[in-house]
Image 1 (cartoon, rainbow, N blue to C red):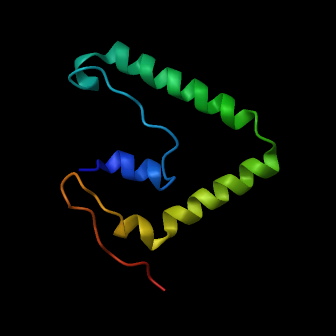
Image 2: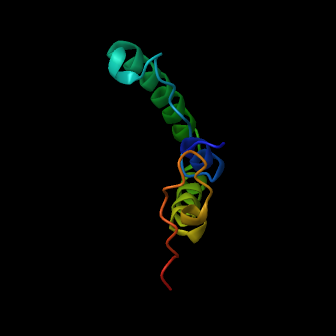
Length: 89
């Protein structure tokens, strides 16, 4: 089965999945904060190293993907409860 977060990453909706400490973020706040800090640092470095026109085009394309009906029709895999609504035309 596919998890929702993996599907969102494959669709390009999310850039990176933040790992959680064993048992979940609520069990170890400091570890969860460290994981998040590492991902945010990595993503910010990546974004700030892109030329502005390329960054803007990539963001535009990413948000266009989010608006496409493919998100809503994507296989959930985990529990099958995503909305199957179609994009309004």
